Length: 518
Image (cartoon, rainbow, N blue to C red; front, side, top):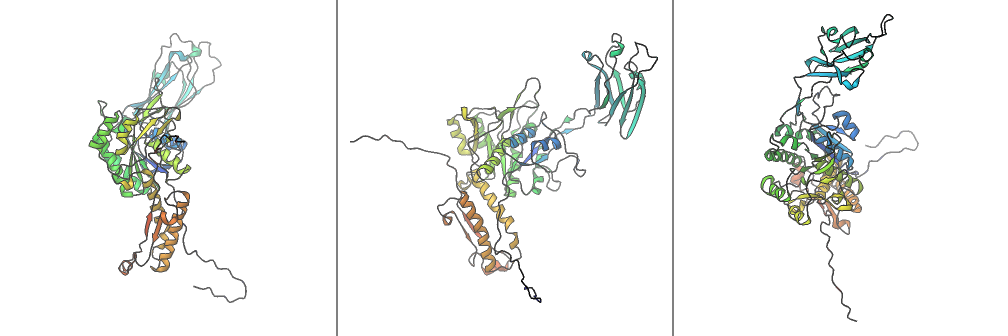
């Protein structure tokens, strides 16, 4: 509606553009579902830390979920993701432990540390939050040379505190006998220990609860619940996720005899694939079961797993990395490759674009692979969608495959599926302005310009195949795609055709001898 001008002068009117501009969103947002050392404690509405949380670096992950811990592959995968170029990841924690019924303990040394722990505090209740504070007392004027140092000991927890004065190492058992929070036991013989060594360290010492007990995790725990925002299903709320991993399958699927429950393995991976297909904007990055030879993994893929999806990619074999949580000389550990692969996807998107196949890239942090694969063996695995990770001498350990698990040749390659995901998501999000607009030629032309301009930019960047823009894509929105019946139903239909670039998977040189006929 035109403005009313009553006073002479110069006026400026802002006129909206006849077409919107589409900007591609993030293409490399990962999501990890699995086990962590601890749960975030900053959300009272999520005390178990099971809802998706976004982290943007390893330090932030450590602050929220703890670092590396035995029995959890997710921290190794997240570290590999960030190390290989990833920048954004959602974490979905699945509890795999329960509190122990054993009390917490605290052992403190005497002045002679060679004797080991001198005194041990044990909480009277399991999982109690108790802190012992030891404060040295001034030496009495009449104290002899053989008098042991004395202390004030404060035992606090549950909002209450107990204070004991004039406590020595020799009398601590008796002095704290009335405590309702701790039991105390002297662990060394004080008979041969000089008085000046009968000391206790000063400071505040929280008593750590007993280590939690591991519990079996069923497949349904990984699947989760969309309403509760847990497990794989909980990622429905995270619209920007583009790739999902479940690295802790090995922990949950390992039986007591050390073998892997391949039924659980398949069940969880199928749930992950179904989620990605349902969302239609993300891909499942799958780990092959460990400990299998190339022939065994081929049989597993063909006879047991039998996945057929354009929204999933499978990687083999596992990779060996440094183990920051190593004990007793176990300085390396085999880990599932999915987190590292997701990092490579991110790195490729940043350096080249989502249309570039995420392959022929060095796997940062990989020391070796679980199984060396020959060229002939990969010839059996590549056609059935098993992407291999192989060492190439001085060129490092590289990912040497970029296929999906689809039998449809239109979706053979990961980059093609991910390019379409990005284009579809961008168009959907960027054309929301058209909803409830008048469904006429003006709207149709505006949508054609908006989508066409976006695709022309992708073609110029090298994402689409064709010597000209007309060969690379087309956008159609007219009376043919929008007949009266469609308009009466409130629909506007835009038809888009795209020619994606595909990777040069096989580079062939034909070489022949040239005879000198002169």
